[in-house]
Image (cartoon, rainbow, N blue to C red; front, side, top):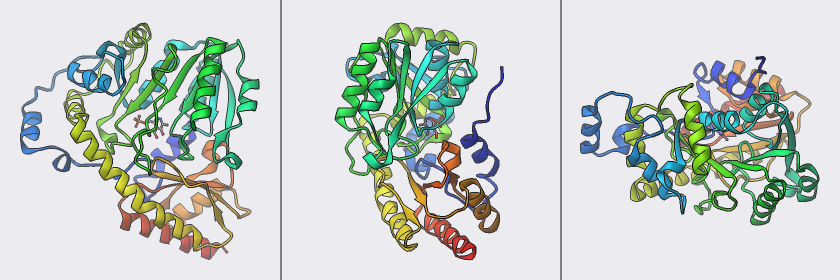
Length: 370
Ligand SMILES: Cc1ncc(COP(=O)(O)O)c(C=O)c1O
C-alpha cells in the first residue's frame, strides 16, 4: 500500500529535537509526575506490576472517561495509544476503499493521508478565514450527499484554534443524519479553551456519532500516549477487534496515571493551569505579531496552544520556516503542511520565557531577510 508523507508529523519528527526553540507544539507545556501526583500516588506507581493491563483500557479509566460523556457506559469507551490511534482505528473500522469521507480542512492531516491510502475518496469542506474559521454551510449542504459514508471534523480545530458555533454543529449533525453517514469528531483540544468554557461535544447528538479525545493537548500529557474513542457499543466492539491486530494495549502505567488525572477535582485543576498558560501567552504572541506592522494577520484562536497566522511576504512557507530553523535554530510549522501557503502555525503553549525567546529569534530572522 502506498501512502503519502504525513508532512506535518514528518517535519516535526525530523527537527523538533534538534533546535533550541521548538514552537511547533500545539499542546501545553507538559507536566512532570511530581507536579501531577501526590507522594502516595507516585508510590502506588512504583509498586505497580508492569504487566499488560486490560487491552481496551483499565476499568477505572474507562469509567472515568465514560463519566465525561453523559449516558455512556464503560463498554462504549476504547482507550487508545494517543488520539492518533483513535483516528486510525476508526477509519479502519468504518470506511473502506471507494467510500466517501467528507473532511473538514484545514486539519491535522492524518485522516486526509490515511484515508487516501485506504482508497477512500476524500472530499474536503473548508473552514473559511473570512467567516472567522467557520464553514460555509451552503457549500457544505452541496457537498454531503447520500454517497457520503462519514463526515469528519476536528473541533476545536487544529491549526486554526477555531470552535464551531452552535448553528454549524447542528447543521453538521443534520447533514450526517440526512445522509445516514457516520459523524466523527476529533475533540482532542476540548478543554483548552481561552474563555474556560468547555466546547460542547458532538457526542450524544446523533446515534451514528463517534468522538475521539485524549490527554495530549488540553491536559498537557502527550507522553502518556493516552487517547480514547467514545461511540455506540457495536462500533467500539469492532474497534477492539482491530486493536488486537495493532498495539494490543496502552501502557499500564499510563492507564493508572490517566485514571487519577481524570478525577473531577484533579481534572479541573489541570485544565485551569493549562488555560492560564494559554491566556498569558496569547497576548505575548499578539504583541509580537503587532510589532511587525503589515506583516501578520490572524483570527485569534478560541482553543488550543496555537495561532495560525497569514504573513505578507513573497517567500513560500516551507522556505521561510527552513530559513528560520537553519539561521536561528527555531522551528515553526509551514502552512504548506496544511496545503495553505503564506501561513505559519506557531505553538503558544510553552513556558512564557521560552516562547518569548523563540519569537525574538523569528524576528531577528525576519529583519535579516527584509
Ligand atoms: C487534531 C489532532 N488529533 C490527533 C492528534 C494526535 O494526538 P496524540 O498525541 O494524542 O496521538 C493531534 C496531534 O497534534 C492533533 O492535532
